[in-house]
Amino acid sequence: MSDAPELPAAATLAATLAEMNRLYSENPKRAVRGQHFIKALHGHIAYQLNERLHPSARAAGVYIKEEAAILGSHKSKDVDVAVMHPTSGPLLLVGVRSQMSSVGKNVLTYYQDIVGEAVSLQERYPMTIHSYVYLHPLTYQEEKEATSTLPARTATLDTNVDRYAKMYRAITGRDDKFYRVLSGIYDQFAYLVVDFTKSPAELRDDLVVQAVPDTDLSIATFVERLVATYKRRNIWLDLFI
Image 1 (cartoon, one colour):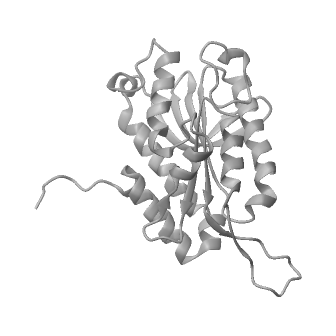
Image 2: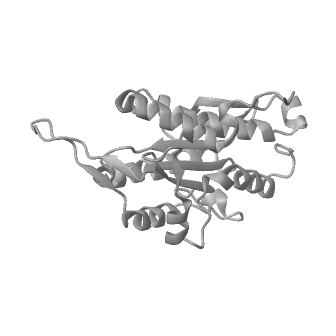
């Protein structure tokens, strides 16, 4: 028997997806509306970032905070995961969202929201690393009309994965030289398509890669991409190992 300490569920992506699958299977409405479901993914990202914090950053008081209240250009925004400096404020921000039903009906509205969020935060903190994670289920339930007696229709993303992946590619890759004057574009983006009908839940990165082979949108490389972006842009504080 190994004496190695047991890692928390947030340590691995597979364990995080398994926990999300469990929460969603037990009670879909409670999992999504109560945010238990998506907070499992928050926890995974926060854990991975915390594991990469440099000792000098810890000594300087840098810490990871979930649900951090960050002042944007016009109002405060609860950012899902933040790397915070005690005097300089946010060094790296991660927004996380899942859309588990009626994808086609609401996806453009949410797209506008996340672009607007980037603009607001980047106007106030241009040097901060800004990023986003978006999750769609491969199979989902359409919302029922209030007057309908019919069961909610089951739908799949099908060829819409191609469209959605290209939408998210369009708002990632903020330029390393002109980031101070560029807003509405994230430094890094992750787009997850997950098949929660499988056990264990299956991450379908293959569908995203097929749609946008020239851009890495994988959650598996997301934290590593964040670290690399920070290191290119900031050379005076060793934030990550």
